[in-house]
Length: 121
Image 1 (tube, rainbow, N blue to C red):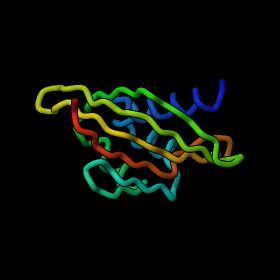
Image 2 (image 1 turned 90 degrees about the horizontal axis):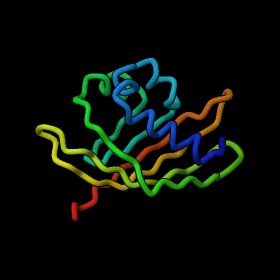
Image 3 (image 1 turned 120 degrees about the vertical axis):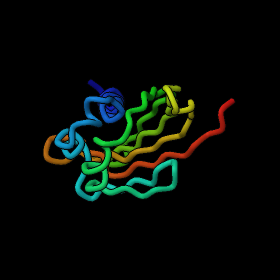
């Protein structure tokens, strides 16, 4: 499997309900020095994700326009458009997403993530 496919699968895994409900799986996919600037303007660390993500309401999301760029032997940048599906009280939303992944100890882990809301069209 090529790098782009591997990282797409990991991003999709992090958006899945199963992973988002499992602190151990979140911890396994996120680097210890992780930082996120969320689309809502919040800053998250690995500890924040592991503690809070399993308790947040789940919202289904899809990924499109996915691209991966290898930055070095052990790091890669991914970018994509994320679409939040309208469910109940959640309105549909689009965002641009970027993540930096690092290959360490035989595994890819997310080091950085940022989301930026886009206006609905």
